[in-house]
Amino acid sequence: MSRPWLLAAGMFAGAALAVVYIVRLPQTVRPNADAVAWVGERPISRGSYEAALQAVAGDRKTGTLRPDDRERVMQRLIDQELLIDRAVELGLHERDPQIRNQLATAMIDFLVRRTEDEARTVKEPALRAFYAEQSFRFQRSAQYLVDVEGPTVPLPKGFLLPKEIEQRLGPSAARRVAQLEVGESFLVGEGDEQYEVLLLERRDAAVAPFDEAREAVEAAYIRHRSEAAVLEYLEVARRQTDIRIEAEP
Image 1 (tube, rainbow, N blue to C red):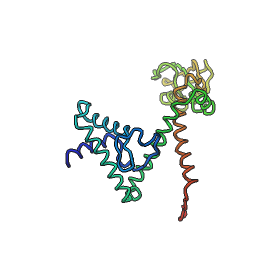
Image 2 (cartoon, one colour):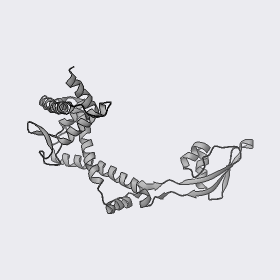
Image 3 (tube, rainbow, N blue to C red):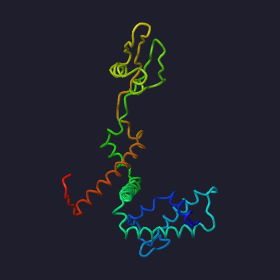
């Protein structure tokens, strides 16, 4: 293998798989607005070029580019387009199951990234409306402050979630703690192994206030919009495509 292809291997290992680019993704700007090169009628965008340069620089111990890296990266991106053109001509994207899976994944990733970028600019009213509609997502679990009187039982200080109590005292004790009123207690075990569990304070499950949960709300909104974008795309694509099923599912 020649040195240029050694460079290419390192570059593409650090960047996206070449096959991803078989999917001709829609342009979000005019094709020639930021093109650094053209292969036939198709541009190589500055963003792709800069990303490839960063991948190569990241593989260097110095973290910087060599004098001839820019030219080599440019040529490898051109080679990549030529190889992909030939792969499409040969129908590899239709016959190879691995490539088909990668293409489907690449399309989902594209839809998700585009939607995430749009969702990050969401205004406060939209976030609050999502919070009100999806309040169940921001439910805080009940928490209990308990004291154990008797043989040493390793309980962390502070409020505990039911799962934490269950891990240390067992499922039965965790269920009984949840049923107690503040100041009530119950006994666990028998004889010398018996001890008392006292509920000092409780915080019942409740929806976290918007201001407290804002970061979680924004993250959930972005995730929700990304999932919806994929489903919306597939729904439109199904309506616009002639789909025939020849065999019984």
